[in-house]
Length: 166
Length: 123
Image (cartoon, rainbow over all chains, first blue to last red; front, top):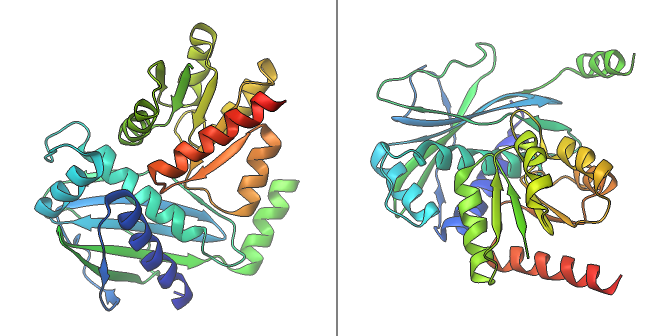
């Protein structure tokens, strides 16, 4: 994966948390994630398509997610609440949307988010695309952004454009 | 003023509703996607619409295009994570009057609504 795709996610995450939650995020050292298991119990997942394809996962321990969502929504919300998944989904939506807006010369669309709540779940991504995990630390606890995206080959993009205009 | 909030995220609708309430607006209707919004505009007759872009069933841009076929003047503010210049241009061409990029502060949303309504009043 182009290292240039990492920084936009760091900046976007800090911007989303600072703007919507007034919460500072300390970013740790990104690492290549090799295990398939989700980092934590709550995963907000969003897909990217277009010039860049793949997935972005925002993964929280339950306690951190409940604190973050409560701050975001302005009310005490646990994972059992109807609005819990919606709030986690909107966070990953804003992070991915903000990151793609920072990509240079790339047209990218994002999917509607999905949220998985539960211990020991697995988020399957493309096997040939490395997953980069960016650890984050806040006053609400730690979480991680997992990015598994790749540039489409130039001819692949051109083929798709030709097919679309045909 | 009657305002229609169109966003698939209840959390975002609640946040926007809170800002609108603080601004003194009380006549607020909600829709969870473009289709839902199209089914509500006739009866509700909104005077301002805040519309998300990425939604299931019918996205915000498709909704704006469909709505503009029946209503050329009611102001629409797009409230979305889509921040690329090309997207903003696409939305304006479709008939959007103003644009707010998520994440936003209450002040920004307030400011955009005020400037949108002011522009309309001077036309």
